[in-house]
Length: 182
Ligand SMILES: [Mg+2]
Ligand SMILES: [Zn+2]
Image (cartoon, rainbow, N blue to C red; front, side, top):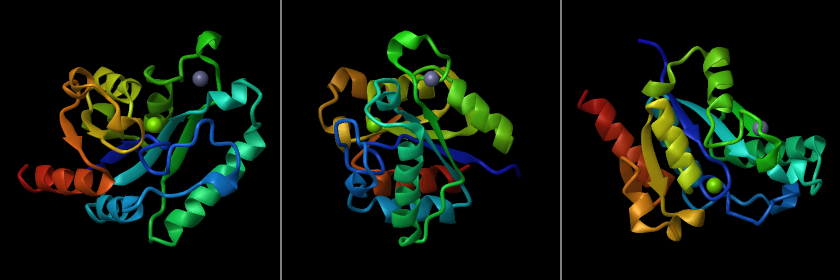
């Protein structure tokens, strides 16, 4: 059976939301996020982060800094026994008209080519409407976490998600259940 993947938003889903997180020192895992990701890994799922980082396009930080932030993120996750298979970022501004800024599917398409998976078989987890919109567009099973901006999302938006969960830990429990009853 081909490996299935979880497409994860970064800010507000894995690490604590900071307005334009721009330094490795600002990376802080959401409580329980490491454990949740470890549980997803144990289910045999690959973990891929898909993140909009328009702070680059806005000149708030450069790609080298973004890499350093991701080195730090990986370090914190490694301490919890978690390895991300990939991190795919869109550095563009909304007005750049790129094809990779969520809710567009460019980053997922790149990841799908590199890791050879079908986007429709993915689980997508995020804290914002654009995450849910992307998930729906690619036919994935979508999860809204109530961390980050997810705590402020309207009921109407939340209704667009297949599942609304507290956090990554609860998402891993629901996904575990879905995989078991296939
Ligand atoms: Mg987010
Ligand atoms: Zn882009």
